Image (cartoon, rainbow, N blue to C red; front, side, top):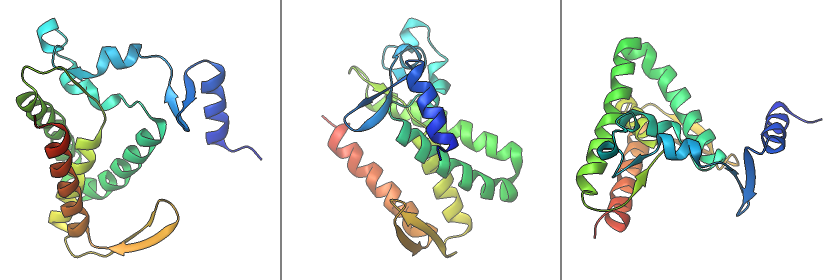
Length: 171
């Protein structure tokens, strides 16, 4: 039988919201992306909302799902530890802090940033600070069972970010 996700994707395709490119589902219209993604020219054009709206924009549905999946589960854990008010503050700090850092690195260059990865990375690092040695299990690529500790995942995320910065953000 057809599942809920399959029906939702079919409706988005029928309404011309999604298309398949390069083997993945992508949002068809770029209007939302242009309105909400953070670019180096956004603040100069008066689009200050992009400092906080860029996490809402994702080009790939799979990336959106995976990031929101991680934000949901880590957010639930952090909510019980730090409370709702601090979690909102942590999220806002991650979003605005990442935007300002991205601007500092990309001054004078053309570019766009989008996605909620700064929130996920921030949640992962804070979770690892609270529970560095707690064993967690998950399915890597939804196939391979992996058991590890949050401190290793946090170091891996920081390492990937540093390598990504060195390879794509530095001239």
